Figure (cartoon, rainbow, N blue to C red):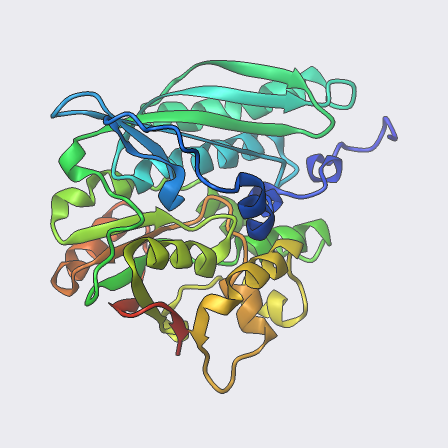
Length: 349
């Protein structure tokens, strides 16, 4: 490495953000059949429904939500990378309707390639986000790694009766998405030096915006399910919601918030490798496609999101209150994007 050239964090990793998650099909093959070990009665959410976090009932008033998330750099600025990784990790706590309480840091750094001040900046970025969420970083673990890796173990609490899962959607519900999609396309364009300064600013603003609305969703009434849209893209995480609840989803493509520049970049051929893997894993579940369906649709709806928005399934008469809840928390792009029906699979219209 040229000692006089600025260090690009993204150049030190094979992928970036949630786009470096394992291929969904490969992950399923690795995990195999569920364990036959009998689960404790108080473990009320485990990995069987591919939910966002595990949940342990402490007593009738409190449940502990536990999750972890980490990845390689999606941007080159170290402090921004730390902020994005921490925001993304905390998102899983909010997706369960919980409030974060504290975190542990997960740090893997190529010590011989990154100067200490860059590593400190990554940790400082993560710490600032965790403290803003009211969940200070109380410890963690670090290793010398081939690529920069940073993330958090995030812990939160929720009343057991207000816990949100990804498998509670009901026929008749509407679907609300909290943030625009296109972050994976932005990250690919950034690596190719094709992302505009405005696009970069929008990418950072979205990926560092905490999904705080999740903590208050259940109190609104009529909210039946929630998840966050991350590495498997909108269709991947929606398919998990549908499978868990045994329902069918209908998505109105024109209603889905998409970053305008991400759409134009995708039309010009910019995409991540993960979007193709995501489509290969979920394509069979897409049982309804319009006549003008194209490769652009596959790129957009399977684009891996880093620190993406919450996807909420709620009763139609609760939709206005849910949207108002999002908008007041600074998620102005939150929108109704479709509905839940009886049946199975996903249709896009």
